[in-house]
Amino acid sequence: MLFLDRRTTGPRGRRALTRWRDRIAGLAAAALAASLIQANAGNAAADRSTRPEPNAAADVVRVAEFLAECPYTHRAPDDPIVLPNLPGASHMHSFFGNDSTNAHSDLASLERAGTSCSPTTDLSSYWVPTLYDGDKAVEPTGTTFYYLGEGVRDDIIRTTKPLPRGLRIVAGNAKAAGPGDNTISRWSCLHHGEVNPSHDFVNCPAGSMMESYLDFPQCWNGRDLDSADHKSHMAYPVAGACPSTHPVPVPKLRQVLRYPVNGDPARFRLASGRGYTMHGDFFNVWPEAEMAQRVRDCINAIIKCGADGTP
Figure 1 (cartoon, rainbow, N blue to C red):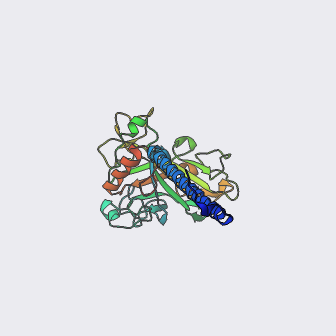
Figure 2: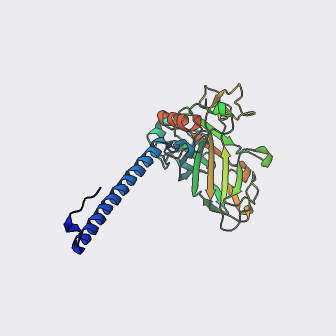
Figure 3: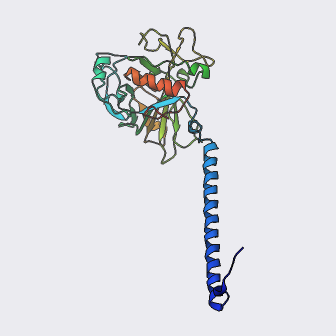
């Protein structure tokens, strides 16, 4: 109860009382607002404490892959796998990655050299027959080398082993007499799926680029780093599994080259012949720890990784 003395009964007293009541009401409103703010803050904090954190794994692309970008380095009529120590004995090759590759290259010499690859830890050498537009050599402006788990079942992907250091592989058929002699390499047009892929050159629309795809075998015999024909120590999967003769699954190398040419395919030839003679050579010079980390974190885990070996 509020008790008033005589000083509050006149006009001046009534005005003072009104101001006093207004002040009390303002203080009460401020206290109520502060209480509501604190309550809301507490509720928000409680929400955050019970709300699950975003799942980083949800952003991971479930594809077993890592890669290296390895631009063109040089040309030479050399082949240190098929014709070792015989400089000039081969048709012209375009080399990518390791910048020292020549007819005399071996694991030790390649390990001492530099590379055009990203990551720079990949000292591997990759090479293909040079492409010609008429008599003019044309080098690819896109040079990506993918290492993939696809081609075998997921349970086999999870047991894939690193490519052994020093492994040499040749894929494709340099001596193919027709498209039917080579079912591995294929040509297509960048961003023009309406042009059907072919084992021979394709007619790409103006402004586009011609692409070459080549898949290397991914089943190893577990013993040999090379063989007499440079192919027999490796095999392609059968029905999603490695054959018993080549029981060790390793990453599949996919070579993707993009050439800045288009138009009439009659203008084009490879140093080895028609488009269906496309082939690729690979000399593995990845450091063992770098290869093992990528196989474990990208291939076995079935996660898409970039050139740095992370998602």
